[in-house]
Amino acid sequence: MGYRSLMAVDRDQVLRDAASLLTRKATATMDEVARAAGISRATLHRHFAGRDALVLALEALGIAECEAALNAARLDDGAATDAVRRLVREIEPAAGLIAFLYTENQLFEGEEQNEGWARIDAALAELFRRGQESGEFRIDLTPAWLTEALYGLIGAGAWAVTEGRVARNDFTHMIVELLLGGAVRREEP
Amino acid sequence: MGYRSLMAVDRDQVLRDAASLLTRKATATMDEVARAAGISRATLHRHFAGRDALVLALEALGIAECEAALNAARLDDGAATDAVRRLVREIEPAAGLIAFLYTENQLFEGEEQNEGWARIDAALAELFRRGQESGEFRIDLTPAWLTEALYGLIGAGAWAVTEGRVARNDFTHMIVELLLGGAVRREEP
DNA sequence: CCCATGTGAGACATTCCTGTCTCACACTGG
DNA sequence: CCAGTGTGAGACAGGAATGTCTCACATGGG
Image 1 (cartoon, each protein chain N blue to C red):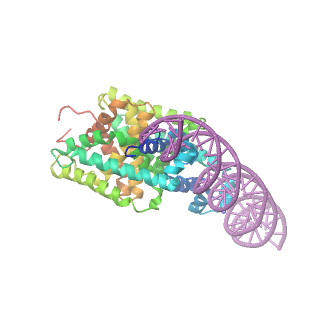
Image 2 (tube, helix red, strand yellow):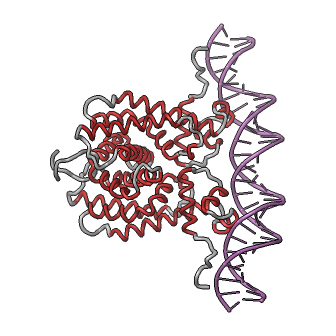
Image 3 (cartoon, helix red, strand yellow):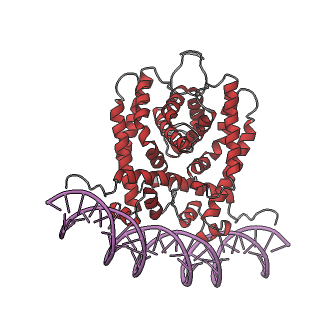
């Protein structure tokens, strides 16, 4: 076989569609998820044993994409501000997925994948800490809060784009500029 | 009767407890909600006909609290930056509720209350627009995005507090400072 | 004191979702 | 052309949640 049949379902695309729907309607049924993904409930069930398995797969995909973005952004290189810019740019394709997972905490019933998020959180917090140490970032905003705020802004950005309130092309700029520079106008740095 | 019996359930408190639980676990059952609110499922059902009615009531409460905060913050008075500070301070008690409602879009199946949010959105966007016009806020970040970002940061702040990653007393400071000033350190304004 | 009100606990039927199965069909590759 | 593979549609039982009901009990007011 080697290559998957063209007829076969694009597993990652199904997961993205699922995340897109579940972000708007967390109580969506498996049938609704299947419809949103353009497949039948039977097929959805062939790929994911149940709702738990689906969410688990969503988490795994989200973690994988986040870590890929982290690597691609080279957070340890150069100025912290530039690293943040690279990070947001790299993470943009996964924004919808992150927006879902950020609100889908499920009380951490399955602790398995939690260490994945812990690693990502740690990497982000370390980036902000490095920026503080180098004097780029202010010290009254804790790295933990900046990390949390970044998640929140990514979610808000993804939502604003899907709602049509922000142009897709402005996604990175809006998030980075607000996170780094804030809303207040300045003369010159 | 005049005053409600001491035995009676505190309706708003039930709604807050419900929001608190549903924020963490959107698929919680009515029984779980009742337990979280410290009442029986029967009593919960006496006050809210069903899940839909519960969410509707949550929205109504959220809208009411937001509008109360908007009025208390006097958004039209003085500098826009000061108005933002007042707003976040006033809205803090409702942050948990807002965090839930912001992620609970339910595809707007019930469009009734939507105008309530539209009014609030308009008031916030107007505040940011006023700040841009007065030269306080930068013009490359649209009022619509600043509004969305404020929601996102309130949600992130509420979550960070409940998770213990940010001190409750720092809530307003963290949000306002990041929203207005951003993460980058400045010499002096 | 006793009645009215509101609650908790539990039973109950109903509805909905889930998970599994079968079968027919479409496409692919040999 | 012909198997092999994967899908869609539908049926089905099992289970979970919902919505409604009854009854006993606690409290507070008249």
